[in-house]
Image 1 (cartoon, rainbow, N blue to C red):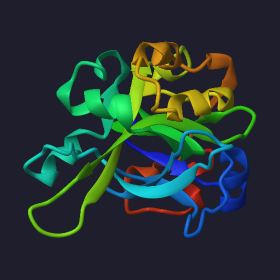
Image 2: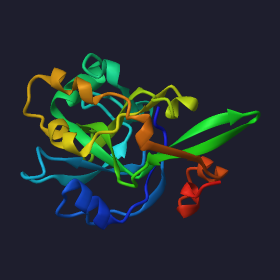
Image 3: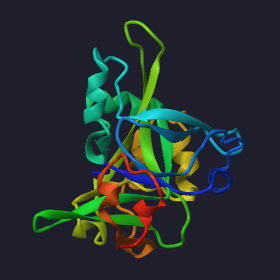
Image 4: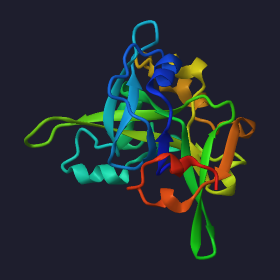
Length: 222
């Protein structure tokens, strides 16, 4: 599962890493929670122009009768995205990258839950594999929302939880974003646990437990 993450990097760094011409309005975030708007990146390739859009975290399928379903769809299991009705069409047609600097996971220690911050060892941004959809309410503007794909945890994250977000390598961004390919089976190899040796994990303070807390203390080592 991935239920909380951070994008604690300057907008310029995100633009350079993902090949974006504009990241206007992108702010540093330290404690991103479900139902909040998150940055997503779409576009066939860097050469053809990728774009950044803000979408609600918790995917509302286009056929949904009520937006409340989105709160239960913050994650999509890699093993079933091509068979579940909610994810099957977005997997074929509406894939995106969700940039992050790291994500949080918790370990229960007695009566308390110790949070950990998990990031890439080289300090570069993460790119979660994501899906998005557009929902039309009965009245009002359309709502675009997204979900983070998860897979089995690697050995490091597995100390805390049995799932982790799918993290894509930069060399695979174009392949993931190219929705012109009809055969999604060519993407299966991307939905694997990220190598443990490339991951760093450290405990952080319990300030992050409250989603209303949004400042650099959330990612400071405990």
